[in-house]
Length: 352
Image 1 (cartoon, rainbow, N blue to C red):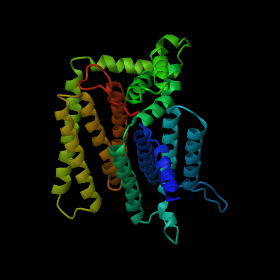
Image 2 (cartoon, rainbow, N blue to C red):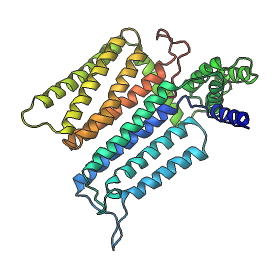
Image 3 (cartoon, rainbow, N blue to C red):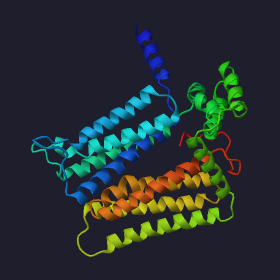
Image 4 (cartoon, rainbow, N blue to C red):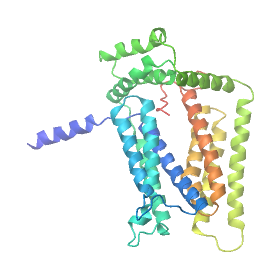
């Protein structure tokens, strides 16, 4: 009896395969939630905290959050494909931001939206999610069975989407990690390799835009000035972060806890950029990942607390961070597996 139960538990563990792109999708959810909270608070402060409803009714934005989370979940449950997963993660993240922003109402007897500890509670929730994702990224192991399952999940997009060159590249990498004795592996590999010849349908407008953006990136990355400009942009970013931290800590008077946290986040973001600048000498991909960590630190920590001291600058800062993050995600997708990057064999782009 005990042996049977042990075998059943082992089978359940083995049957719970990991998504190789799970952490990036969850990061999309987290970042969209953080940005939503900041934008909601900025909008409400600018408009005098209006209420939707009337005649004794108040439609709290937690309800819109629940609706958006429902839409995001239904998208991921009812439709196939990585683009739908990204959209669902984004929509669900926005909904979670609407939901968590009203936590003060649900932990106080007087339904107090302005309950001061609510800010810390929201922050703790975001930090816990970020820590869980960091652990999940470190513990991700792509064994042959996991590799094959993820390659099969990419198959439809890889063989039918003319713009899905990154998905084809990733699927082939995963198939190289799969059990080569499995009869599915050579069939899937050949079908994906032949995809360019079998894609006879005209690409959609969205697919044409994706192809154009990838070609533009490749052309830019091949120019002489690309790396120097990249160094200047992020060197200025690191210097600005460190100067901000120095000014914040050097100001006379008492320094509040949010200001301490902002300064710490600025130092951490600057340090990550400096590490990335050193990594740039040997690997663009490694440098981009350090830059991405720096932007995430600023979004998840720095700008969250900046909003409560300088709302306008926080909104501007979050907008800049989102643009940088989107650009870095595109660059990482293109650099992963690109031939000019040393030591690239078998590197997975992880669905970024």
